[in-house]
Image (cartoon, rainbow, N blue to C red; front, side, top):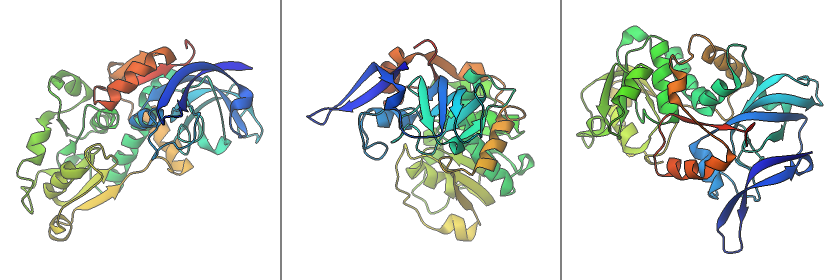
Length: 331
């Protein structure tokens, strides 16, 4: 059987060429689960894979796409039946294992979870890894004892995929959300997602060279890292919690220990790649019900495989707001 996929190749001069081509099921890696992909989504990690970043993908030719949703064609393990609707995210999908930017994927069945009844294929990929990561951040805040009555929750990088999802999910969960962004002109977008206040990135990092800043946040979801994360930790209130899941600002965290030993602030790392199956399934159920963003459609821009090239360029330069959903049925 033939199908279409975005294929990234490494050329002799160490450049990376992206083309849409016809592939065969025999080209796919080993695995007990074969899925016909209906939708995928574009994440920053996909753009890195598509441009040959060695921290994501080292072996080519390769098909990126860390998110996929579709119908089961076959499952040798018996965990699923033909026609079952499943979501596949994280693990090695789209990194070294051919991913969701192809009309078929073959993976271990342990990577898949059931698509909740209250989610369409398209909605699940509007959420995707970004929604799962944001939901895991909210869950960790809750389990750390940060509840809506505790005070304002800051979300940094709020116009991006994870950030915008965090704003929407926190709002649905009853929190008063302060959205921080380095971009201007997105007040209406963030307010529609549920942000109570919108502040600039510069306001978050003002006077960040000081050892401590005035206490502001009961908790925070940081997707930026670097100096922004340091400033957030310094301005979190006594006993507050900050989750960290991003590094677009920097991988470095240069700061003192005062927020931790003088205010009892907690920093929790969030990783959705190896998230245990039971938590993953719980989060997808919540995303399909009480945590489902109220205005999910406002966050979506749809494209086909043919439109991915310009979207990859846009996300690499920080020009994407919300979520790009990739329609594989029309590719």
